[in-house]
Image (cartoon, rainbow, N blue to C red):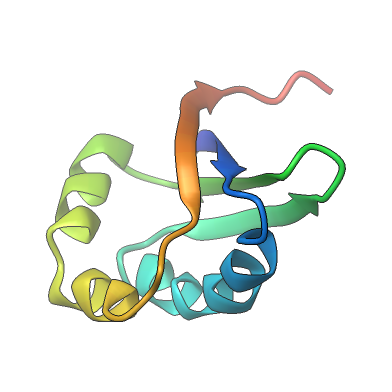
Length: 94
C-alpha cells in the first residue's frame, strides 16, 4: 500500500472554506481506488494535513484521478485558499 502525506498552507481566513469543501473530494478519490486515511485542520499554523493511500500503482491512479471529469467537477466554483502544498510519499514505522 502506497501512502502519501499532503500538507497545505492555507491563506488566512480560508481554512474553514477548505474544511467545508474537503468532504466533496473524498468520493472522487474513492472512485479511483484511494482511501483517505485522515484529515486534520491545524488552526494554530493555518495548515490542512491529510493522508491518502492506494493499494496499487499510486502514480498511475493519481494521473487518472487528476485528469478525471469528476475531479474537475468537484473543484468547479471552489475558491481555493491553498497557498503552498507539501506532498511526499511516507511509510508507517510504528
